[in-house]
Length: 340
Image 1: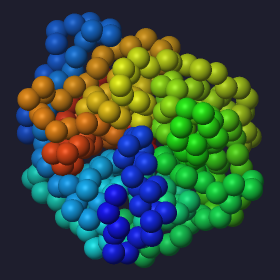
Image 2 (image 1 turned 90 degrees about the horizontal axis):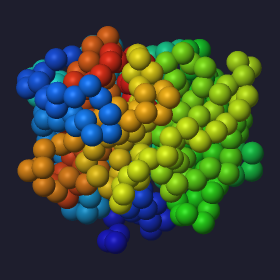
Image 3 (image 1 turned 180 degrees about the vertical axis):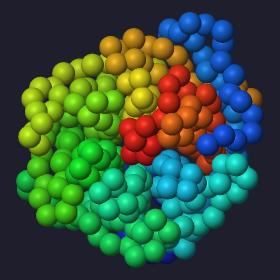
């Protein structure tokens, strides 16, 4: 892989690994679905909204992630592999199909974005540097919210979930191989001063989202293609953990997770431009697919569902570039289906 003018070789290696293994409001055109009641054979067809990025010559790739709506109904996404000087956080007006740069810098590799219910700032995970940073809603005032080791080991923070009080739950994607189950789930207090490992020994923790009632966390483990459930004890700890869903992904792997108002789980697939949708009991309800004619798209990384509505926006990337696709979700959007 070619050297970038600003980043070190170590950071380049991390970014390359991310892409190889996964970080993994109404608008025009309604998404069509097959007339089926549900089940593994139901297909929900997504439709292109717009192209947001092209492959960057400096990194040889582009990878959109972390879609989340701001308070004005605009959609924000991150480009994980954007080089210094290129937009790393992008704001999209999905009605007008326009976009604008919000933030860039010369070091971060941001894999997720989400607004805090506590202070209203936008929080980003910097996978390359083991940090969580925050921005004002307009992209100004960058701050390092959390950095350093957690219980003796540095994080590779991938996705974020906020509880109702604004505490962060981070998927720490350590160990990106089938032989190294070093992934963790880390809880960070909303003031950034205390961190706790809630679960460890996980297979490359990737997606993370609270269930509809904030009683537990859905966690995707990329190198085992499974979704685990952590039931919380209401005191900042974990009461129990079990494998909830085994994802039949074929060549694809489990990326980010979102949850709608009905408790349905949206499992993004790295290595396939699609999402698998399950109910909270693990029954597969549908698969969201982009049209077969959409060539050069390799991964669907995440989704945001319009708060209070069913219009969903999925980030999709590959050699053709980074795109937004839309579809009609089976249930309405809530905080758990808005970023992460």
